[in-house]
Length: 165
Image 1 (tube, one colour):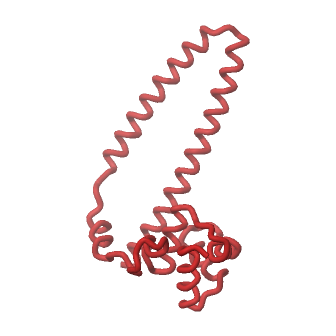
Image 2 (cartoon, rainbow, N blue to C red):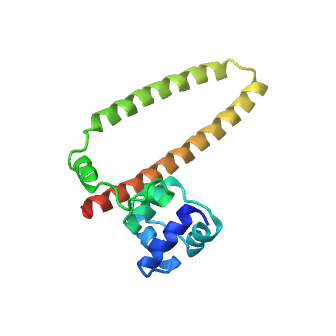
Image 3 (cartoon, helix red, strand yellow):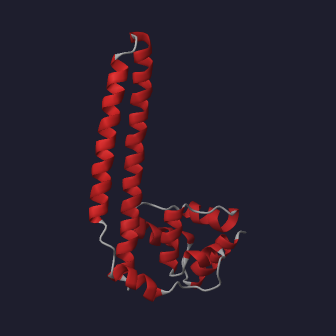
């Protein structure tokens, strides 16, 4: 059994929770289901969760991620540091807007360059490259959706932390 699995099991049993109940607690925080088999795999097979689920697991068990991973024997992180960071968050809305504006402008320039180059290709080569480009654009759409899901999960975690300060 891994350190992570052993600590999850100990903390879960200390609370009197079944594997299913721990999965439900994490699901409340993430907004998506976490099956009992996942918790069982952590505890018995040495598997470990992705980062976003690790953070939610630590939150549900009221310990630090470092504790779960065996990096420290201290159960809790410094609450006052987190509280100060939440109460005085940096105003990054302007930075995000600039990133979006710069990214959009760069993307539009790249698209224009590609259109120009595609229009100057022979038909047989043009179709192949257009297919590759369409596949890549679908992939980018998928990545954007995943990023949004990850950000929503992280937002729920932050809201949970704020609520429990």
